[in-house]
Image (tube, rainbow over all chains, first blue to last red):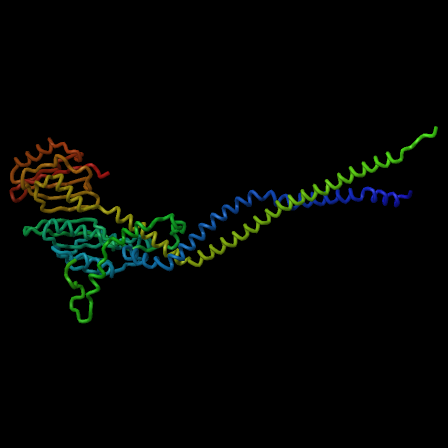
Length: 257
Length: 205
């Protein structure tokens, strides 16, 4: 028997076995090189999918929250917050609040004097250090909270009226922050009140705000917004009566607060 | 005797051997397919998870794009939050002046007529008063006060009144009064006496 015939015989006898062994070999090589490494990834992949699902839930909720915000509440919130803390030296809301506060019964408030960089009422009693700080404030920082100090002089008919007036000042939506009160009892029984008050505006630094704060549920601003909503603004009282031909623009219709 | 060869036995043995090899071969093939099926199903599961992973990636990217498109809303809301935080801080830190006035009257037992009063948001009250009756300090002062220091100047008609006030102060043991100092006594140009006191009250907790 020549070698060729020998090989043919071997193939005829063990062909099936050889084919099977080759199949196994190919399968194991393929599995080892490609399939098994992928299968081993399954636990990590499942964990990654869990994380992705959480991220997707959060991201979708946040996107929906932003969408709803843009459609409904944002502008109203902005108006509310910007009234309390404007982004610029908003003289209109300041004067409106000042005039509105002045309309309290049993209290006479000196008219406001507004000159660039300095606000006062009646005699100029703004302490020098506050006057300096008003100008230093501008130079100090061009972002963040900016203070506008001013004085207000009022005469209350009695102590109760004076106390009520102080409360009124602290209930305004445009933030009026009393720093000092001079309380002088006059012989007539009335009380001369001189207030040093701070009002503020806020120049936002676009870079400093943290977007994670906005993430729905992380920052509950509703309580704070409600608090602001409960504070008094005087626009209706001061502006509504304005009409063509009216002499005193700030005179209220009913006169009562 | 000729040897008897049973060819049938040999043949059946050979057939048995062949059958066993054939069975082994069949089992091997079956095992191969089972192995291949299980590996392929695991691979299929991996493939499915991989697709799911990619799908989720796409969804996340799309949600992020959506967030990106609301960048201005985000920025405006961010500013609202910054301002709200600042405004809340300002409002909650405000000194309660009405309470301070009530405290002063309560601590001093409404026994003096206030002529002039300066209230500072630091909790210091400086006041000038005239004696209207025997000055007394509240036996049961308020538990928490907004004011922590009263700089009190009382105008009295005679020097004996000064003694009386100091005597009264010495015997006073109010819960909220931490310390009381007589700063100065003077005789003014109107012939009246002024006594300056510094009353330190427990800080509001």
